[in-house]
Length: 254
Image (tube, rainbow, N blue to C red; front, side):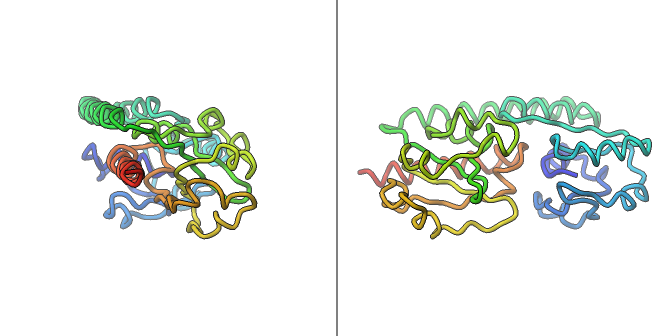
């Protein structure tokens, strides 16, 4: 019922175990051929029952009601609730252990840890680090969650909402137009879950025309399937994408 578990299982060579996936799953592309059994906040319980899975994987308290119903029907359910990059790495190891691939999972995590350190070292060479605003939703405005914030920091950014990003629930991460305007970010990175980002809308927000990111055209849409799921996509694709954006900003200063 979640994206990150699917990509993890493919990377561990256990894709044959997957009998059903969320309709949001896009990575890897071949996973889209799997039977769709859920969205994120609801699931087709009848379809799941028919598939007779040995284990059901989900994510966050948002899926607690679905999980409760499935547990009541006698299924084994594993719901993860990780929020940080370190917790995401732990999740990969835990999932690997559940499917008998702990050693492979450890090797995968070791590769990601090395990649993180490489990116940290590269970003440390930046003469100036940009202030970054990460947005998950526009109305109400919701700033990026912790793993989103941390990956931006690894790539050299300074998240203007680093404190707020630790709120695990969306309502804990509401921010105002005035707050962002006062922080004056150099880069705006938007990834709206389930909705295309309207890049032009940022310059229309009250008081935002003087924000550096708006004035200088450093507003970017990021793919939700990479940045809004705490799984391998963050490391497989996210680090390189963010690093490229921040390097582009840095070069624009010269």
